[in-house]
Length: 91
Image 1 (cartoon, one colour):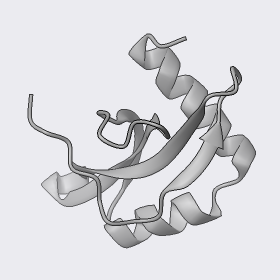
Image 2 (cartoon, rainbow, N blue to C red):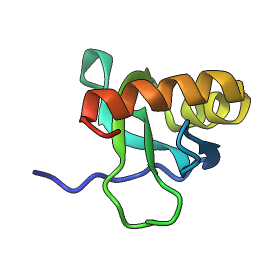
Image 3 (cartoon, helix red, strand yellow):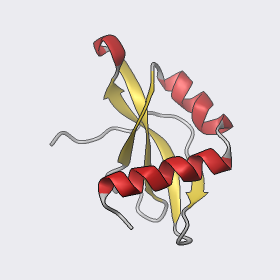
């Protein structure tokens, strides 16, 4: 599997329902029309080198990802994190 690259964008701390802290990040991805973009992803806050858990939320550019991560509500980030963990089989 190819190494995941995170886009130089805002990282934002979010706490899951179990009290563990995660970082919301943008992971490079090929998005619509095979263009380079990013997806919303999460990694444990205490594991900077961990493989991010990717979501289905796509951004057309690093700037769009940066804006979304900075402005998304805490409630929405926690909800997206919960879904990403469920999809990845993480409790």
